[in-house]
Length: 208
Image (cartoon, rainbow, N blue to C red; front, side, top):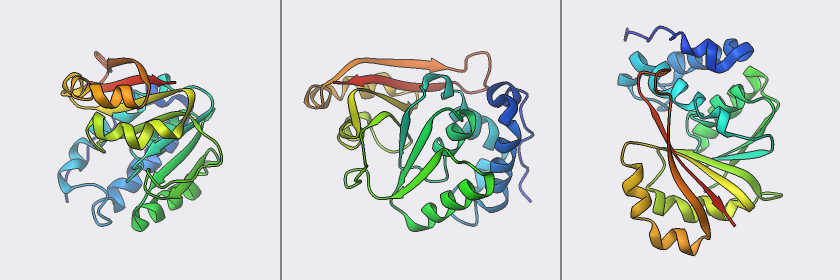
C-alpha cells in the first residue's frame, strides 16, 4: 500500500468550516483515483500538498459569480474550488466520459449544489451565458489555452489559470494570442509562500 500524505495543518485554514468536505473528496481520490486513471501512483504521498491545497490556495482570487473550469479531470481545481467557495457557481468542462462520471459522482456524494458538469471540449461547449471567470490547471501552454478559455468569458471576465514555474515565459510566448483575444492586464501571481510546501503560480488576466 502506498503511503498517503497526512493532512497538512494548512487544510483547515484554507477550507474553514468546509474542511470535512475536502477530506471526503481527498479520501475518495485516495480510494479510487489511481484505479480510475485520475491520478498517478506517485501522487498519493503528496496528494494534499501538491494537488488539493495547491488548488485551494487559488480560492480567494475567485468572485461570487459563475466560474468555468476547463479540463476538470479529477476535479483539480474545479471540485476543490467549489468546496472552498460555496458562494460561487462552477461549470466543470471535461470531454472524457469516465472523468465526467467521476465528477458527477463526487458532486452528488458531497452534496455540492453549486456545481454543473458539462461533457464537452472547451472549443465546442455551448453555455447558456458567458462566464465571469475561467480557470484551468495543467491543460496546455498559455498561448494554446487562450483560444479555449477567452471566448467563454463575458466582457470584462477574468482568466485565473494555474501554471508552473515557467509561467512568465509562457506569457512572453503568447504575445500574438494576447492581442488576438483582447487579453489585458496579464500578471503572474505566486500564491502560498509561507503556507504551502510548494507555491502555486497563476496567470491572471482580463478579457475585454
